[in-house]
Length: 117
Image (cartoon, rainbow, N blue to C red; front, side, top):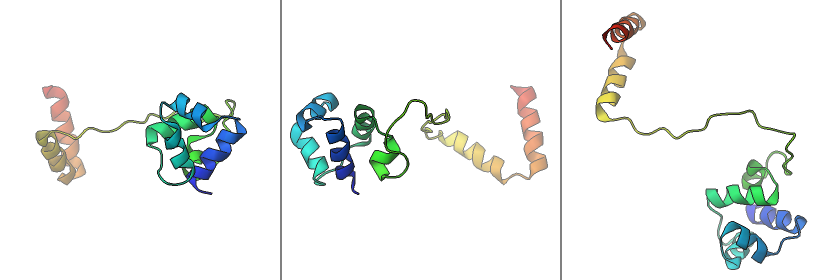
């Protein structure tokens, strides 16, 4: 089943019109229609909001895998999700040098830095 079919099926199960779902998502009704008909796909932000509004799991709405219906008693383990920023050039250089060191020298460098800072 394609993502558009999962959106339509979930919307109809919640007895929402395309217009009402569009209003809740802050998009136009033709946008919802395009998603459901496979003309376009929602952004990640819209997929997240769709999952919340339709009471389905994000993974299911995106991939069709896993349980469909969200049930509060089934909770995903708490995880920290973050996007790593790119390190400045000097920190990347330091990291590259550190990674080339043998374990004993890494330990010595870390000890030096602990006492020096």
